[in-house]
Image 1 (cartoon, one colour):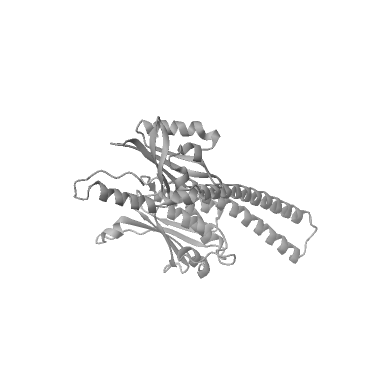
Image 2: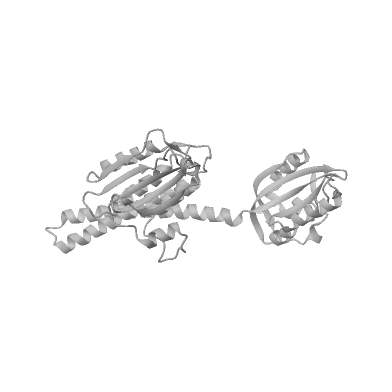
Length: 363
């Protein structure tokens, strides 16, 4: 880059500091253009290597040229001129923009950073390429909506027709009844997958407020009350003190709900036992123990298979045959991850089944 930084009084002077700036800008991955403002229009004075790679324009051919004529699509000129006006007035600009490259249109996070020195006014245009991120987000939204919609609708159709056929059959044999029951269970599982996919979408699309807090006792009791109604045969115990708050928001309920659902759904017992409890730090506990709350969901059912745990806990490679059988544990992991927490798996000493814990910072 052509301009040098000011003398900071440490003996390096303009030349030494300018060399460091140029070295930094030349090696950052964002495309950077340095420009002079001539009658409010940015004229390219230099570009870094990433600009050449991303935009596909050679540094020599674009130097001295109006930047907008090279990178701004004709129908976006009004937007670009408004940004240039802000830069001319000394304002730093941040905006997602569409810009033209030698290979076509791409999407960028644009930052326009003005400056003035003895040589006049100018600035830097910094472009972070968001193209693949934006495209992937749109694709995932489309796939998520289509998948959830089709799963839910088709599952409802299958379950409804299976129930009707069973009612109309004249004394079906045991094999037919079992086959129909299997189809019905599969349909309800598809409905649940669609619901869990919807929860995951809500977790991922909503930004996390670092200042948020939630009463974990209220969430635990609400989940327990819900499942006492839905699964009256289950014995659900809640041991969470009043007033315990953690750094999270109401989406934490998805994680607790998913763990309780998993404990009941995968327990072959007619009366599964589930306990939701919160670790209470001892009086002599160290600062770390007091700072973190650990919510345990224990059960008396079969242990979660190792491959189900490992793919989530240990970052095992996700493959077509190694990804977990459902979305419930993924929903819990992604929820806890969103709040800067940790999910862990162990065996329950008291109940003999699973002990799945959620670790979050206390408020």
